[in-house]
Amino acid sequence: MIFLLLLSDNNPSERHRIEETLRFKENILQTYRKQLDARRALLDLDNALMDIKHESTRNETTIEQYVLFYSQKEEKTQTCLFFFLLSSFSKRYEANKENSPRSKKLSDENSTDSIVSETSAQRARAELRVLEQERSKIEKQRKIQLKEFETAKSDARRLLDVN
Image 1 (tube, rainbow, N blue to C red):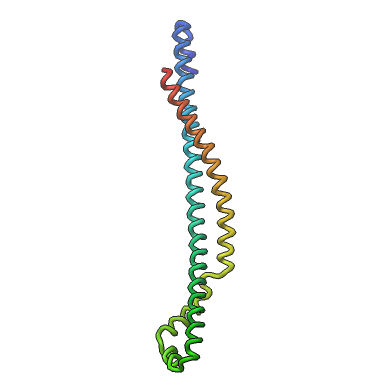
Image 2: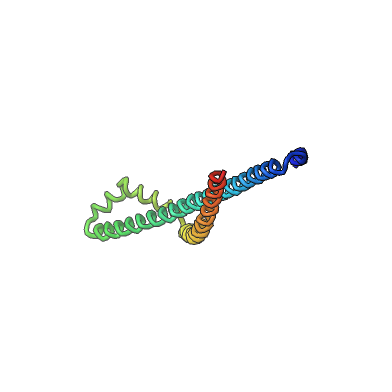
């Protein structure tokens, strides 16, 4: 503005050219600000999606551990039942089973029942449902934000191509 006051003595065409240049520079700055804001918002949404992916993976791991542990436990129970039935036919098997390192291993594994509880698996499933809804919502926001970013980018290109 001060620059324009100094040019008031000059001819009107020169003053008009300088005003147009200043408006052009201001428009370019505004479009780049919009572009930066849109890019910043995209990065925030990408970070949120990454956090959701991390939490989902953690919950999926909890569920997998629960399923794996209890399916192995079920398998071992069935194996023990088979061996019990077999032992009724053979007293020698019973003596070997007591001294077997496998029986000690089974008893150690049975004491780890508290590794992944059913409630923690249920909680993980519930969190996964909520995380999936949140992920869907953020992905929609990201699409909208990406369109705004592309619009700001094309506006900046258009301004630069005009002059």
